[in-house]
Length: 167
Image 1 (cartoon, rainbow, N blue to C red):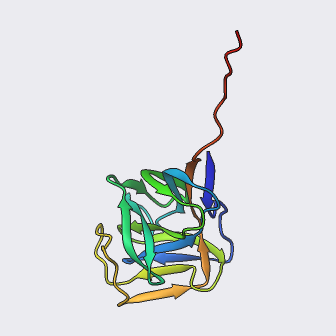
Image 2 (cartoon, rainbow, N blue to C red; image 1 turned 30 degrees about the vertical axis):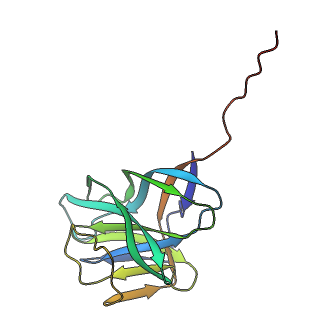
């Protein structure tokens, strides 16, 4: 397994995504197949169990406007801040940026650290659990953050054993 994204618990701040979803941009350095997306998250407003989902967006014309895939199931989160994973399947291509997106039902707190210019985008007018496709540029905010979100993936090509039959 390899990792694409930010598998560190951010210490610069925590964003309480109370309604919108966000996507954080990362560029793979090899081809592969994503199997899970992990998010470090919690519900910061007390007790309760809530659902969150994940998706992968790609770019068209420099915006995150094409939903490539959305997870078919949701995962619970609560007041305990911890890494939580959602199964998802998506083929990544070396050098082609993607956005790892997450959408919490309510009060979805995710830590972050400083990132690159407009590395994180958010969509403010969305209603859980619908990731829009294509995403429009209306009501999009940008942040210079890298969120605590990453994908587990299996690199393509190589890594297997080669056998030679010598008789």
